[in-house]
Length: 520
Ligand SMILES: O=C(CO)[C@@H](O)[C@H](O)CF
Figure (tube, rainbow, N blue to C red):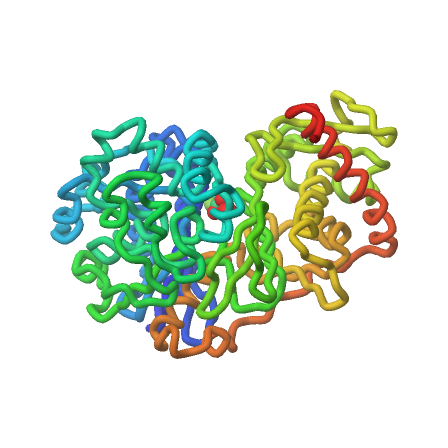
C-alpha cells in the first residue's frame, strides 16, 4: 500500500512482454511503491498470447494501474517527473487523426475508450516476431551487406528490429501504412500516452531499429528509404535518452491529481532501461535474456548489438528470446508448475548435470538460429528426454552456458573483477543465480526489486529533472542502494564448466549443421 505522508518522487514505468509495472522512488532513491497489471491474469478478455500484443491492451492496462494507484491512496501531487521503458523493437501505428484524440483527452473517461480507434494496425508486431527475413535481406542489400549495416546502425539486420517490421507492413498492408501518421516504439508510445502528444524516440531504443546511424544518432536515409516511403516524417527526430520531452498531459492533472509541472522524460527500451549506473555486467532475466557487455566502445559485430546507452557511451549486448517463457514451460512440465520444486531440482543435481546437456528453444532463437529442444547425454548421444530434475538443470545450465559462449565470441572475458548484476523476474530465484555464478565463474549481485526497468526509469526521470546531459548519471544515482551479493561460484565450478563449455559449443554447431547442412 502507498504511504500517505507526502513524499516527492519520480515514477518509473515498464511496458513489458507480460505486464505494465510502475514504481515510485523518493528523493533518497528508495522504492516506496510498486504496482502492476499482468496481462494474462488481469486482462483475460484479450486472450493473452505472449508474443502478440493488442495496442489497446497496453492502454487498458495503464487505465487499470492508475485506478489501482488512485484507490490505494497514492498521492499523485508529489510526482516531480516520470519516465519509463518498453519492450524493445515493437512498433505502434497511429492512425491519421490520432494526434487530435491524444491532445483532447477528456478526463471524464478512461484512456482506452478514447484511443481504441486510433491505431491503423491493431495487433502491433513485437520483439518475438521473426517473420521478416526477406525484409532483412533487402535492407542489408540496400546498404552493402550485413557488416555494412552493422557498422552503420550497430547491428546486422534482425527480424525483430523495427525497420524490417515496418518494411513488412508497408509491403503487405500498404493501405494501413498510408493511413498511419506516426510510428512509435513501445517506449515512445507509452511516453505519448503521458504527454498527450507524440513523443520522440530516444537514441537507446532507436538503436534497436536498424534505422539509426549509431555514430551520428540520426536516421539513416539509406535505411529509411529501403524500408518504406515518408518514414522519417512518421518517426520524428530521435532525442537523447535523458531528454525532458514535455510536461504531463492535462488529462492526468484533472483525472488523477498529477501536478501541472510534472515532467515526462524520454522513455527507452527495457534493456537500456535496466541500466542502473552500476558498472557491473547486467544480465536481464525476463521474457528474454539479455547480457550487456560494458566497456570501451565496441566495434561492429555480426552477432549482438551495439546500442547507445547513456550520454557518451555505448554498450554491446546480446539478446536471447527463450527466457522466462521457456523456464515456465519446463517448470510446468518437469517441476509440477512449482518454482519451489524447480529450485529443489537444481539443489538435488550436481554442477555439470552428469554431462547431460540441453538446448531449449520454444521459439526460433536469435543466436543461435535454432528452434526446438535438443538433449544429449554424457556420451554426446542425442536422447529424447531427461528425468525431471536433470531436465531442469539442463535448461538453466544450457541457458547460461550459451550466453557465456556467445559473449566470449564477442570479446567478453570473465576477469577477476567481473561482477554480474542479475535483474528481472528470475533474479529472485537464488538457485538459478547459483547456476549463473557457477557457469560464469563470477559473483552475482541483485537489486532488491524485480522491477529494475522501472527503477532504472525512475532514476532517469531524476536525471532528466536534474538537467540530463549536463549532469553525470552516476551523480544522480549515487544514493542508489548498492546491489546485494546473491551468489558466488561454488568450489570447483570453473573446472566443471571450463570442460563443459567447449562441448556445449560443439553440440550447438552440430545442431546448426544438421539444420543448415555442413558448415562451409
Ligand atoms: O529483443 C530484445 C532485445 O533486443 C528483448 O530483450 C526485448 O527487449 C524484450 F522485451
